[in-house]
Image 1 (cartoon, rainbow, N blue to C red):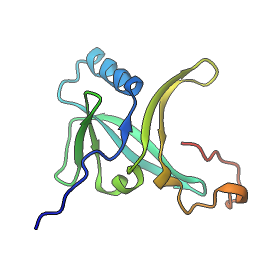
Image 2: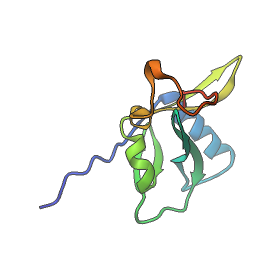
Image 3: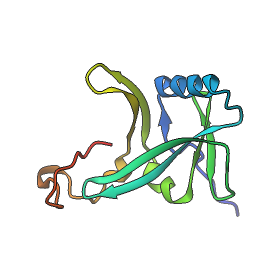
Image 4: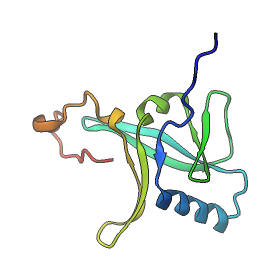
Length: 125
């Protein structure tokens, strides 16, 4: 019996989708997708990276959301489940994408404990 697979791992805001579509259009990148991946970690959780990619592997999960194609590798998939990707243009911090993932923060010493690494870090992705 085949198992049902949830192909929509995370949500993409309309603002993030529009920003990706603008970049793809400006750079004339037909056939590209937004790859979201784990780019590192630390005491406060997982850090994410993003890239425009047209090299899809058999082990990648691809899906569409808000009119854009998204791709996630096998390792990053579990960290992105239930996450949201947004694009903000803050006058103080600048413009950019934000990934908020509840799965990436589980079990990493949050709450009143703070960071256990002894250094300073931000627990927001």
